[in-house]
Image 1 (cartoon, rainbow, N blue to C red):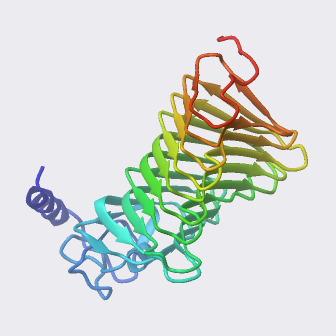
Image 2: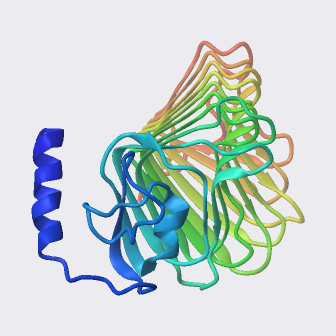
Length: 311
């Protein structure tokens, strides 16, 4: 479907929408490169120019739709919302903050970010997406790159979930994806078809007070300055990372790193190659199902302890 057809369809849809009174919140709002922040954002003929202005008039659990390619500015989210970027929306953070900050007030608030390109442009002290509170975060079909700190941070202070799929996270000065949980409860997450490349560390999962379970499937973690995949446990908290059908390659230190008495990495049907060390578990545990390709690393080309039986 061409862009012209998409816009024509959107215009036809907008004609069926009821008029939105001033100061009302709309279930669906729109942003455009040709928009104005003085518009009500409620139809494709009256779009806003920036995410922040559209978000201010979007109802809880509503949706912001992007009509064409542009930089739509940074955004702080305080409640449930979906952003449909359609692969056109870009956003760059200003110095010292994240492009998208999530401080959702509700414990069950759902944040969905689809089809965005977040580029830090190398600006100092920036992060791509930073989740501080809320119920869940979904990132799909997106690109997060060139931030001075981390690409995506999931920092829950209570139980929460995240899902990242079909997304590139690259060339960030810190973690490609960082999960650091505090507070009480359980955090769980899934990465599927994610490419994490050329970051300081690939994905680091760490906990001080929560149980954390993360599954990495059909993904590539490569060319990190230090570790590819890391599970770090403080205070003996359980941090479990399952790696399946994935590759951790050409990382400067460890392909797999498990550190702390509660840290566990389970690995199956995966390739660990070209790293300084294939896997390293000084105080944690790396366990294999016995069906991996671990070769071409400078050290620890042997299969991790196991194998675990399939159930």
